[in-house]
Image (cartoon, rainbow, N blue to C red; front, side, top):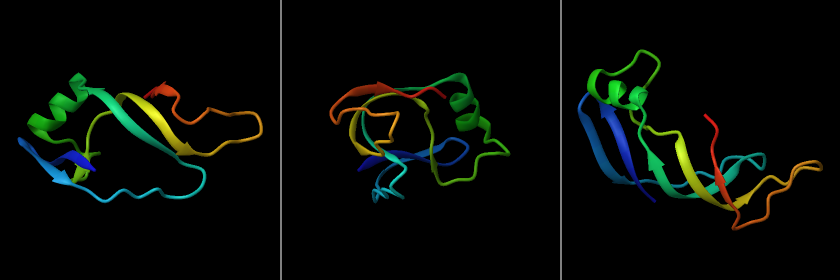
Length: 86
């Protein structure tokens, strides 16, 4: 998977990253679009004490559900389009 990885102030590099699906309670999404908020811009310019590089920034995402947890009272069909609430 290609990702823009934050390595420190003013240092973002495109990297081919390994996909870690984690445990069975996680969702696996294909990102269709991602926007950048002012928090991400400030972190890119100055760093942030809660951000530990290397890390992929961005939380305003529109995506397609590929696979994931399907609980008793919560079910999203694969290939559904979703957005992430930060």
